[in-house]
Image (cartoon, rainbow, N blue to C red; front, side, top):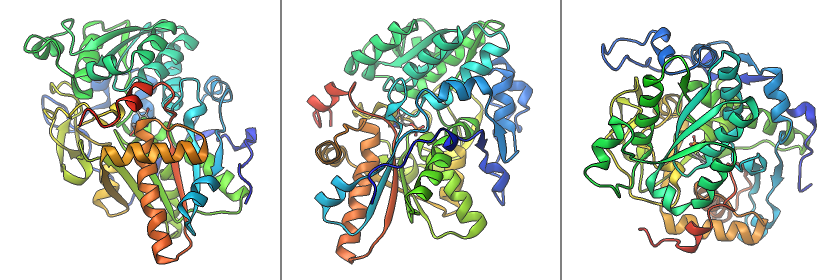
Length: 430
Ligand SMILES: *Cc1c(COP(=O)(O)O)cnc(C)c1O
């Protein structure tokens, strides 16, 4: 087996794949937080750029990628598709394991795929400032990079637990020219509620989202808010990953029977898997899909499927999703990007329909998987991505036990070279 698929420029798709065009039954719509009625897209205009809303509500199967964004993608896309021969050998498994490596993006994760198009769409309609939250810092740095590229000011609320654990990410955002605040902060009403009770409050993505949304609402006209996951359009932007993977796997003459990704809000998992979900829906392809979450923040495996707010203060629309409740503050585990109380409505829907399976893994197992992957494949995974690696190792060992050949494809959503403090202290926060 060839170790790498090629990265031919023509493998980069010209359009995003919108799974909503292929769902038999659409998921329940988002509701207005005040009236509890289905949301009018116009209501979103106070928060989001109009071009972004158009992506969010589109039901076209293919949504064209703007030329300027394609040019920005070409700096790092197509990303590598790698045959994990080292890992296979170490595990002595009959399973063939492949991964799509998103760590080659400018800030080291898949988040640039949506950051670049969101910044482009905002800049095109005259927005001057983007506000956002970040957990581990990958999203904040991806948006800081995209803002710098398209000439926008970027303000980031960073979850305090990560701000303190990952000073490298904060520095990177500042180098890109972004402003970074520890969240909960005293700067917004949403943050102050938590900050005044405890200035060392570890924070959560939900709280940081409230702060960033509030700032955009208070600066209407010049500022808009950007979200790095969860929403339909963000998942759609990530489908460049799976579309490339299909072409690269074809080149290697392989077809996965299991597609795996870690899930925080659900975007990298969806980006790789949705083009394959289409094959399962349309052609009845025998492919399993596995979403992997931390057992410390188990929205899919322990949460409830119901309407809930996307943030912690009830400012955002109500989304139909698996949720631990908007008040849930996850323990400060090292995979900051997976500390979110909810889950993308589209992923929630596919889990509910039995198309996507969910599994929770524990932090020690995740760090062990990262170590094994580093030693066998030479890449240190982001702690988030290591959740996918842990599940892949379990599946590959199950294949060995059954003596069955299988083809596993997973998303290595980012590298962990800015997460050294997490690896140094591994396990200590649990
Ligand atoms: C943000 C992040 C995640 C989790 O977010 P999703 O939207 O579920 O993809 C996973 N891996 C990395 C590297 C991230 O930066």
